[in-house]
Image (cartoon, rainbow, N blue to C red; front, side, top):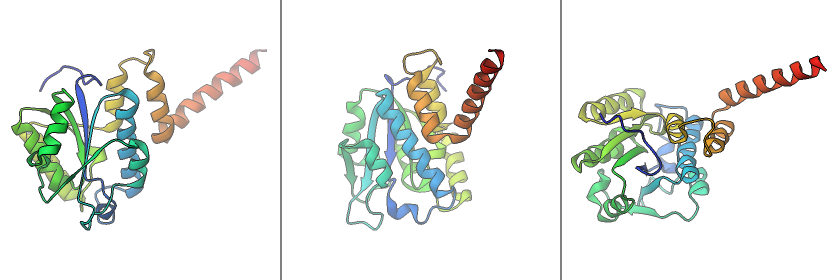
Length: 212
């Protein structure tokens, strides 16, 4: 495993098949939390300016369009529509889009974990990409299928990460110019941490008032 940090300049975030039809059958994660994490990951790509490749099946398939919340974040960013292949690297347009980012580190998330995510990660490893699997922005039909697929990908060489830890790695330092992005992501998508920060700020304010 490479210890070179993940940065917006060397990393492409890949979102695979986060479609509304799949959301109805996912049971490995709470649906609202899953969508929250996916949106947080997409915002990470947009805020920090990393590479971003988004793919989905054909609109005529039962899986349907991408999550509306995800589409709202990516705006007019292109969505590569694939046919029936599980491994997105078998699609020429997808492969070309990943190569066009010029980045060799991929942070991949999607649904379902044991289906298109697994096969796309294996496809990326065969292409000699350094692959990081965003486990909490991926989901499956059961916790067992998700966890088993994650283990297989890790054994094959993928590195498991979580979406907010990726944002932290992009930020590097709370004093950096991009720290505002990290704070925004915390406020909007990690409410427990955001409330903790607000509680701390409130206590500082109360102490200041008491000293007057």
